[in-house]
Image 1 (cartoon, rainbow, N blue to C red):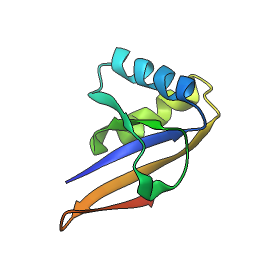
Image 2 (tube, one colour):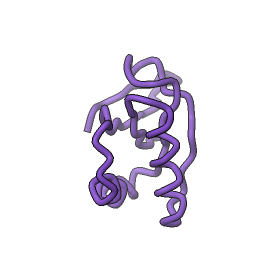
Image 3 (cartoon, one colour):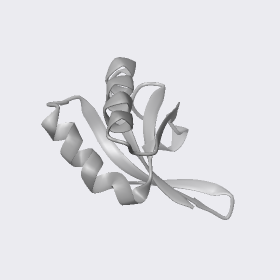
Image 4 (cartoon, rainbow, N blue to C red):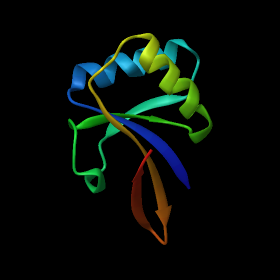
Length: 85
C-alpha cells in the first residue's frame, strides 16, 4: 500500500489545498501528519499516487508557496516508511 501526502507549514494551507483538490474531483482526505515525516503541522492532505502530477500542477496554479513537501508513504511489513518526492 502506498499513497502521497502534501505537508504544509500550517493547517489553513492544508485545508485550502484539500478543498482545491476536492473541487477538482480528486479523491483526497485530511489526515494526521505521520510522525515518520517529522515535520509540518498536525494535518496533511492524503491523495492517491496517480494524482501526484495533477496535485503539483494545482499547487503552483494557486500560488501556494508554503508546502513543506510531497511524500510517498508506504506500508511494508506493518511499518510505515516515507520518501520525499
